[in-house]
Length: 398
Image (tube, rainbow, N blue to C red; front, top):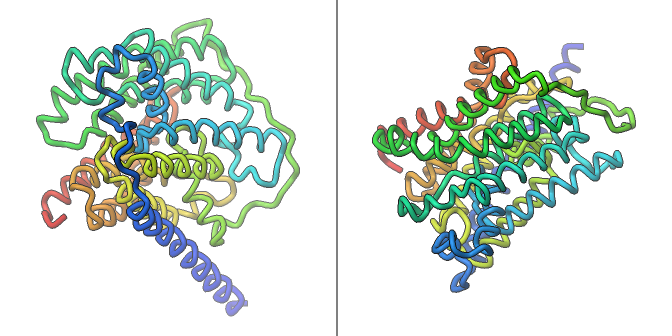
């Protein structure tokens, strides 16, 4: 019996080793592949989109799409369209109980996806086209505004918390669309920039503040009531083996679309295809025209692979763990901070993968009642990014 157990443990280690090797290989393939196929010379650049954006409606539509993937630091037009289409494809597959659906979108509640997407479209539309926060491009002479926060912040989390509720959709979208961008701008200018911290810290702290505020407001409004989320018919299936190479790779891919509350490898594949197209069109379009996209994706694959490797047991028997934290914070932020070097990508991904998810679990245990768990995740993003960036500055060899 002892020999059988030992053989089983050795087999798990072998499968896991295969899985992490595959993820690292994918990261380096993106890094080297994108470097070989980058487009240059086209008109569609990041600076082209933001220059005169308040006067050209077409550019505002481009900014709208780019905002859907700001969380991943891609800010690409085709990537934005990709994550939306990928989410719809994942929802359609789940609705039809397809064997190709992967991880069930929206954390096993695929029927709420149309509401999640509606909250993202509505809140972002309010921020850009109604509240007109893109006017800050002119009034402050800046090249970036945090209008994207509504896509990955309070509105979709409110839908997951309250279910298919029209009042919750309207209240969550209106509050988040109104407060997110100006609060993030004030926080960055007043605190984050003077402290020389990565800009993502102000964004995720804004997500936490607006998220908690929105949850508190919804709790006090009598007409905002929770509604049950319907289940789609499912074919009974055995529990997945979280210690297999296939599951490992799928889980790492799913982390790329967790920020949008999709958490699905199909959506993530659409996302990665889209950002590759953005890069091929013009490397000065994605990632704010920094040219750091290959290193950003490398850091993301490293971060998620390390997290899933260390904390796979948390996913056993239907569990979940915030291994996506470094994918949308630590890795990309530190890559941009340290000029897109491979060493920065590897180190930030490694350290972010180690501390990101446990910090999220810590903050989760201290959340007020009635506040969605995503607020713990974004607090972890702020803390882990600050820690890793500070460590890297202290080491000073990146």
